[in-house]
Length: 552
Image (cartoon, rainbow, N blue to C red):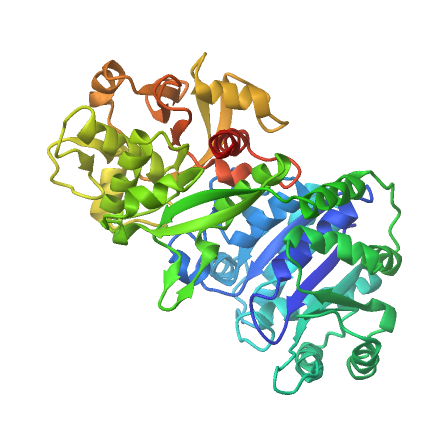
């Protein structure tokens, strides 16, 4: 039977439950254990597909097409495994299943209750994921902050599993110790209170992860041990770090791995994974070269605040490739709907490369097209991701093919030249308003054109995820496509359609010839979703290499 580790968080959100969960899973995997992971989210959405990225961060798409929380992206990047729909469990999905069972008389006419049947379904879900994965350990991250109504049912399931399976179930509570500047002393009371909230659900945490600006001292450890009833050796100091990938190394130094293994009575076969990870972190800390990379987006400005979580996979893909080649990335942000200024060309010329990432709707489209025009003319390395490929196609159509009205039907449904148009099977969904989960999603095969720059990137920087050239499997999330009626015009004008679906029906990637531009690639798919800390994505590796050539 699998062992189970529940991870909860207290005081405030955003303190790193996902990173902690992923770090624990990685550390156990490095000990030769088979792991799987579940994100248990308290919201009533069945999936994350319809959520505004400014409110919830990016939607991460899994290989099977399920749209999930960004934390599962963190899991995949840390443990170097691909997860599926069952690894994402929302309160909405659980309740939806309970209602379906009730409607089909699965409960034999019994009164169906929130406090019994819903936690029971959660337990069934967790145990099935563990069984199907043949996992030695299943790590379950409980989303939200303890004290919220939504995650109470997951804590209830945690309590029941603990009563059933005893020492095979442990709980890790992550909580925050503030350091108010006016007081000058780190305060442990918030952690004590959040632990009491966990206690109120019948759960005594086995481990406390003490998140703080600085590492905690012996005084704070003594207090937390005394008032939270957790052994001192199981209180883990987790200060702020420059790189999230330092967290597993720090936890290992704090003996978290050793103590979890002891607590769960696990038999291990240590690997060299942590050693490789630590060596890479040592290399990263010594990097003193920098690349200036621009991102033209529209989902990072919320009032007075900059929110980078909308593009977290893109940022991590850039970092992974930069670090691998001995650079740090200095990200320069451009707000897409504010790019009509005269200084834009000068500002873009200062950069080593530019990325236009995913996006939806009309807002900011013209700004992105204007930026791409300058990037193409000035030969600045370019990588367009999904919407970024579509905007590059429109720019080329307008300024090279001289189709002045060229556009996407998403931006202007009445355009004369819809070089990007609505997929035929999507028209009914738009008409009926069925948006959630109906777009082109998940892993799809792409046939890479022989002799293309795209092929060169996969061959030069390929890893275990891309070993089947000329076919590569990449993840999609879009409703609009390249319009095949214009294929011949584009190719005659010099645009290379370097990636297509195996049946030749869909254009998956475009590029400019090397003699015209040093690096100009757009993909209909999302390569950023398959980057790993230890295995950067080939296209980002090629993009960073082109950036470094420009910087030299």
